[in-house]
Image 1 (cartoon, rainbow, N blue to C red):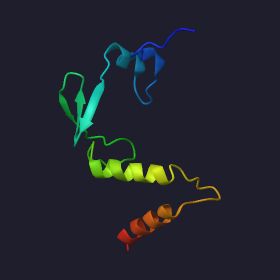
Image 2: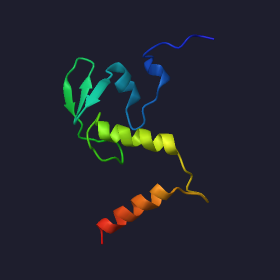
Image 3: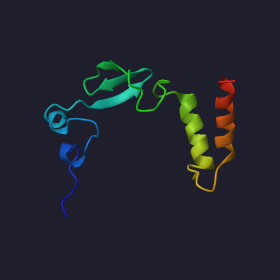
Length: 100
């Protein structure tokens, strides 16, 4: 079996992206902090997308990473078919109250 090659652009398909064009001229992000992505040359790029279906609260925020870690250590996934988890209802109630 062949060993994986690092940065093999043929090994990963990017959805909603003209992959042939991307592989000719790849646009790689190296890291993120606050409201910016940084490319491999260190150039700051404003994150105006915030990811699909996400709220852009900034990258690398300690309080968010701590909350994610706490939640994952308690229960990383709760199916919503015939089961649930109390924090899901707590969050739904808080969101519903915003529209009231």
